[in-house]
Length: 358
Image (cartoon, rainbow, N blue to C red; front, top):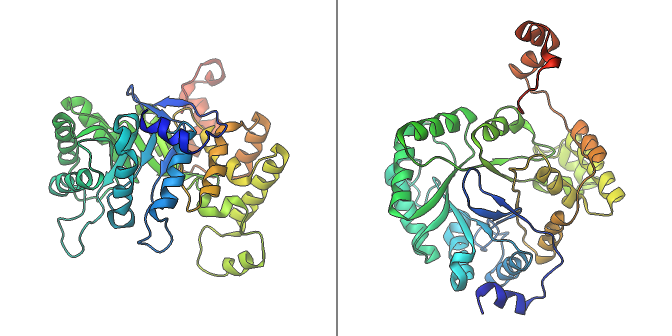
């Protein structure tokens, strides 16, 4: 009996329609929802102990999930230790992703950043914490604007050639940097990024300006975080307390965002689902390459999030959600999309031409 079968014997499998997607241009199969493990570990004051983390992990595995997302800094390294213990009995079944960039030691300039020295040190530390010989997907966690792109891509390619990393991705980085990196990798014959991790939700749609079109152009899988808008889209702030917080400094709790959340709640009521499920499902349906991250501090909350795999939002309701949360794309997008510019660029034949998806 393998680890997955053992998990299923502990907890009855929940009803799920979990399917699998290819990770970018690679042949790697990952589940359509990824398990985010930033809540694994109590060190930050709001995370889970090991037993609770295990229950969440088991619920995910029993639903057919195989894509685990972690990072070297999550709960001071405890999240990686928990993940390593949870996957240990059936390591090759799971696709384990972790990240490097953020610090492992304060007040030391080389214990953080994108550069080769920190990259190699951080990967070795992650392998040790997770008690594994390889990382399925290594994400660069955040761009530092100091390390040359050539240094990053050559270092990551070395890790792939050494067998310590199988695939690479990049998180929280401008679109032009990712485009430059993958173009360079193709030119030099190095390993290219197969995935992009970003913040994306009904209240954070700015990635539609450049990051998401870039991902489509390069064939990148996209794993958005905060698809429920930090809880705003679940409807839990529809009370007097929320009005008080609007006077504080919470950027997410704006009147505009709460109006979007109320619209999400209306759609959820019509579909007989929860607002949180609608928020996650909306992200899933925004592109075939999108694989949302889901996580929780309580097993019940996580089970609810898993329900996003069990239904679809009808086109009319998707349009309703899109319109209520639409953003201005800004220059040059709005300029290039204007009728006048399309008229002079295409010589009056725009409507006669089959256009590429952007």
